[in-house]
Length: 100
Image 1 (cartoon, helix red, strand yellow):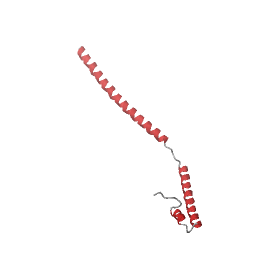
Image 2 (tube, rainbow, N blue to C red; image 1 turned 30 degrees about the vertical axis):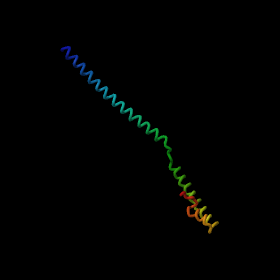
Image 3 (cartoon, rainbow, N blue to C red; image 1 turned 30 degrees about the horizontal axis):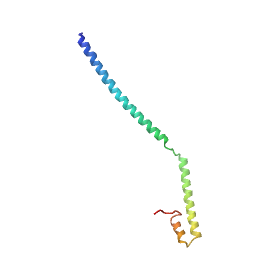
Image 4 (cartoon, rainbow, N blue to C red; image 1 turned 120 degrees about the vertical axis):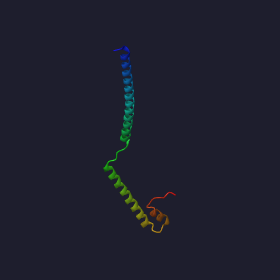
């Protein structure tokens, strides 16, 4: 085997290895970027408050109680002040002032 032939093969193998290492490096960088993005998404998801079904049910019940209270207050105002236009306005708005 001629020394030039061996030198050519070594050079060619070295170039192939360099290209392979370069491609693997780029692939590793992309994988690291995807991994970082996934970590950030998981951290953001963990920071969001998780509301249980029990809490949602409790909040719905509180909402219903508040609505019942508003209805009772509006009824009481109508009974106590049947001819007063100012209180009639309150009753029409279900006890809430409406912003213009």
